[in-house]
Length: 217
Image (cartoon, rainbow, N blue to C red; front, side):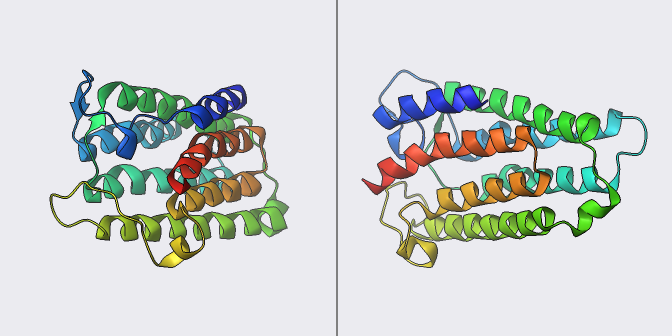
């Protein structure tokens, strides 16, 4: 995942990921309605951890469950709420399928680590990393959700044109929605304090960081 993040960063600084405002609707790619595409793309990152939880024997521990349910909370919001509210452009099928593969792999990686590898002691709940990380996570999630709301409100029903957003963190950051998601996963990495979560946070920065850069330009 770390190597994939580096490769994506190098490629995406030179070109755009072909979805949203950068999609070429005149091309030959099969397109999927935005709401269906976001639902199917994000769903594996919710279902895979849930399946692993249901099929893992024994007591998983409060710490493991807390962090895994926090991970699932994000993807429940993205797959079951955000997907119903979005009014974006149709989504290329190949990009959606790649997103499903990534979400499946990442969902397995995070859930497998928390359920089968991580060890949290009773004193972990009083540690600064957990408290600070969860606070950062939920601040980032709030920024992300609020920024998505601002972006949706820019369009009238049926509109797919892009406008410069105002309000909230958009007054300070061009890609406030991307900034919120980066903050969110950095907070999650701090809370769990593990290589898999830091790898995912790093990948997130490498993937949506260049997109925020291109939006700003």
